[in-house]
Image 1 (cartoon, rainbow, N blue to C red):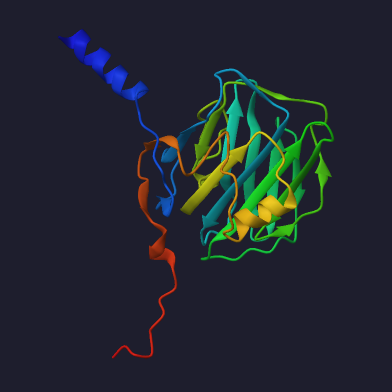
Image 2 (image 1 turned 30 degrees about the vertical axis):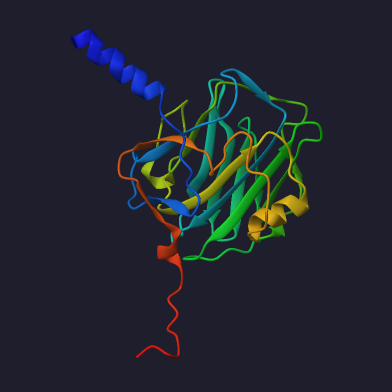
Length: 235
């Protein structure tokens, strides 16, 4: 009987259905070294990336550094990391090497759209924040990202699937997370940023996402973050 229960539990875990999170957000309400969400990508177990684009929207009032997107491989715990250092300043890791970007236009307590791209052929990486491009900087040229990825929201991985630090945790809301195994064009990034029609991510799609919540993480409708407007006909 005990064996049957274990087998049934394993079946339910492997048979987890994807969810359409359109119009919804993940809320990370408190600082911690534990609360996070693991994302399951659409790819073979052992994959190789030579180009990437990750787009997401973040809403937070933190002034300290925090992780927005953390992809680790067995060989590199910062295989692809988007880390916000402070307002207007971001850091991108590819295969552990990093570049920093300054002077990007973002604001606290509003939705900020962030897209990061990288192409192994040229080594060029770029950030787009609220539709505004950063300078293009080079890192990890000619390399590739190979292995089974662990993708985490809410925490920064200092080891493969773990090594979380409260001081690097994300506090706020995340939505519309997409990932592609190619570099999106500026037009495609504009469509994403401003709510136009775009092709959802072929590695991660917010419209069909398999994920696992760990700890204190809440899913709610993004409408709760909209500004309240009082109509002239209201009393």
